[in-house]
Image 1 (cartoon, rainbow, N blue to C red):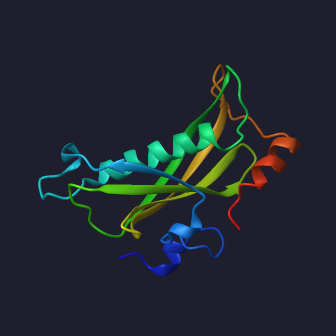
Image 2: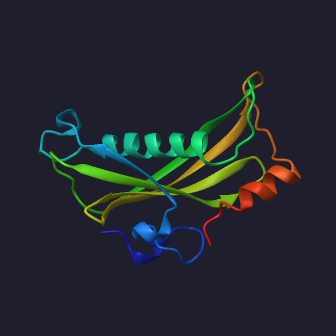
Image 3: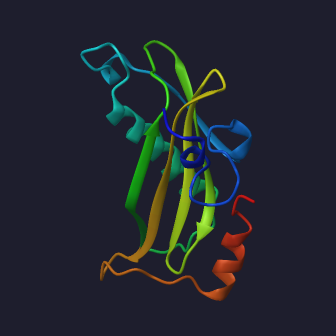
Length: 152
């Protein structure tokens, strides 16, 4: 079991184990294919749950710079596994912005089943120029707009 300090996360006093921390959710059905040989939902499935939620949140909600030559890449992902998941069932996966950096965002994420947290984590997403592969800094207007999404 992860310590409460780690579950709260790197940033602030919000608790990633609480659904009320998040302002965006996706829902997914657990698949038989997600199981490991012990009958648990495999830990790699959690990375997929996180990815699906994170990508949808960043493309549908968060006002990231847009353009043919601008994109985002995952630079870091950490996951704390808190409880086992078993097939069948559904989960809710949450995401929120916890910090805006020069050319990246730090997201808090969690997976919930029946309101209970089964995993929490952080992802760092870097905004890049697709042609050069280099990070692109947010301008002042973008930074102000993104700051409105930071979880307080």
